[in-house]
Image (cartoon, rainbow over all chains, first blue to last red; front, side, top):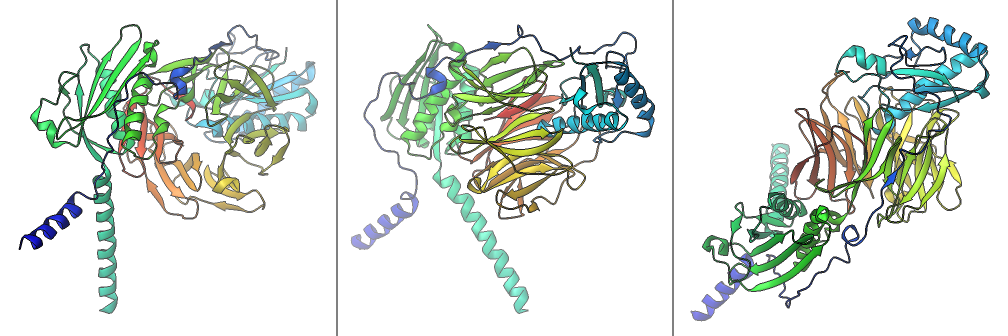
Length: 182
Length: 412
């Protein structure tokens, strides 16, 4: 009978204990040890680029005094886009004609900056800004502005002209700015 | 009738499988209690200890934290029902110091003891992570080295200005690495996190640099008109996937980091971005507006065919991969402006079935950890932002307050 009981107890031990995590016993291991954690053992640098002059970027054009709804500079006007879109709307045609005229009367390189509202994420918003800048470049080129004079850059959502939570504000941020490269 | 019986048997079989799976997960975890023996207030430290133990997926935590002396046996009777008791003593004399003891709960036998010191108090979170990493390793659980790693992210400060910052995974530690100018899209350049890529927008053309985190050595990689982003780095850091713009057209390229040779991977008249290596580097997942909205597609390096990967959501524009696993964010509401519901989904490249990782709020920027078992994401909810973690195996999730209005890009 004792023999059967032993088997029963052994079986229960196997079922209820045998499968659980058993920690090994280790000897005392005193002393500090952080050398295998790079974040702890090494000092990281800090680079300050405030002193780096932004080269050839042109003026920021933000907060234009003459027209708060224009963040372009050097006589150019900004073009605005619908949500998620990168085609030039009909009501922007007159702005485009104006910018063609300014481009033809000026000399030097023209920087075309694509911008977005804050609702995109990550890379996609920068690509959207770039497509907006590209369509403006193509339109200017089709009306006689030399390709080689125009340089594209997308600032994604990094360059808002306003930060209010309103449709009007979001609309102002979905834009392409133009300025001369200095 | 036979069909009905077959259906019922199938349901029963799946139900049993699911139940067994859950029981197995719980059975494999260690019941542990935490004892705070510190003489100073250390709520933040305790939170990190509990978070590390929880997110590892290897421990079942006793819900109450007990105060006891550091030396000696376990004096609180109810703790003896646990498997282990972790006693810790934290102090900030001459930096940050942490003493750790792990005792067998049944007989107070000391099985692990260690001291951790660092001169920088700010790095105390890493001290905690290292201690829990060691305890996890001592108990022979699968590696959780990812909790020791840096998170790197960029954030806007003012229009056209940003910072690139490193943090521990809980964001209790934060340090600015690059301040000033417009520097965005940081991406770790190697597994060891010694260097990272980032794009500088401070010149006429966006320029990709690689910066050594410890020496400050900076190397120019490539410039591109329009836009330039390093989206992914291959397993041995020899190649990277970039989005760059040939003649203003955003497409995906693969760049050899040694020879600087590049090959075009996608060619599309719309938007192709966010390329991520998949299936051991044989193919990529990327975001494209081929169907008129942002969605995920897959493409092999050796063929021109493109396959749609996701068939739900109104805007799927953020993705990450680990081997054959994919995680992405999907917009599930239709507001052009303001609040939208974005959720994180997990799937395998060979399957079209996706599992929801989040169910509430606006969840974006999903990223895998270094072993692909934990997903990190940014959650915006009730005007606050959090960094969230979800363990794929145990389904445990946790959130930490970011204290930052908006993240521009993040890598882990």
